[in-house]
Length: 508
Image (cartoon, rainbow, N blue to C red; front, side):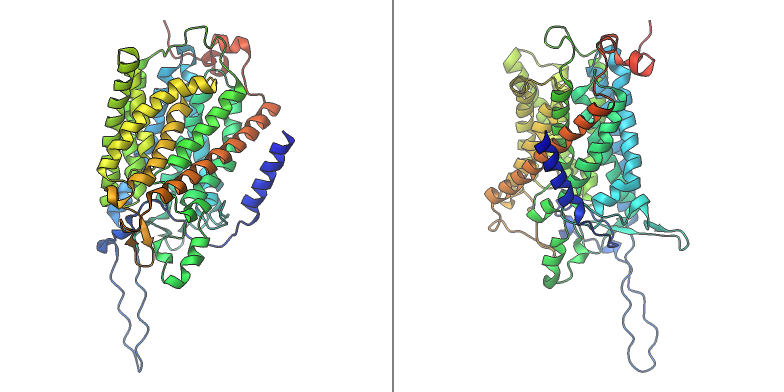
């Protein structure tokens, strides 16, 4: 344990020690290649110069204003992601636990989302999406400072993936807040039915600060396409980006940042908190698969905002992500059902709902980064892989991961991240990635190396697993030493609804 704390201290020193406080506009995740699709209607005309007396005056710089369609799409996407969490994820999880713990799960999801949203606007956004070092951002946007000018009535803008195209930074910040919120809420499912409510909130604060924010910065922060004004500045601009972005890893909407990150935290929690009383000996069947199906359906609908919204523009790449989210999810449902029928002779409603989530998870990093054929294959593979994850792998690990967070989000996230490197290839129908940000030209099929990109994806996966694992282990230990992790045996047997919240989901 001393070595663990020493390692964490060294990592945090490297992470926060060099954080700069330079004023820069935050930018968007770098995985999408949408810079190749610039939009003329988002570029207002240059203001005319005043008449010169002798020599021509310098031409005024163009003023870039956000396109109203892009802005509206981002706000709609944000609402869709909120629907994914409350009620989507809450009902999906709630239906899977026993009735005596229904409200406790709903509370943990809703309050976690609310807590992280508040922390996001206080310091989280700044540390994730402003310039700092390769591991963490700075404090330029602490308490959202500078995001709008009250006197002038003007708003700061954030970059998208196209040169000369922006959205209001406050819109981007709100959209990303929902990503942070759902990531932390996902973890709840791994240790449901036996953790203290206070322990959940303290752990989430620590994990959000020291795991989610650094990973989000490493994967998604860069200087934006307009910073690449000439070849001479490319190395300088790349050097200001997050470490994993510098490697060239592709993560369209959060395979590493959201799913693998959360899944590892959940698995660590399941091990450290221990198994539920009676696990493996008593029946612990879901109390309402009806609610689980409703929750899964809301997740599927909301995920269109999650994935297609990550294009940050209402353009072709948003449409590609939209269609892949539809197709891959449907394919995963079918694959899971086929796998269940082969294993047990019957396909179940729980299996279909789980297959839908598996497909959604796996297509997340790939949504705007692969073609339609790639999306189909990813969905099929994810359905079978995650079915193994919640059966074979779960038994191998021996942890009581209550709602199979690692089996679905961990396995699905890893599958999606690795296969993104395969099907991003232009030779396999993928769009490739931007090879030169000064001209926004895409990589050619001849220059694309599947092996090299898969290796880059694998490095991003490994960093996420190790980082989240170490932070989670230390955070859970700190919580255990302060308020304790687990409720008493009596409270667990009676149910957390009554013992933790003094109410019950059902009467009569």
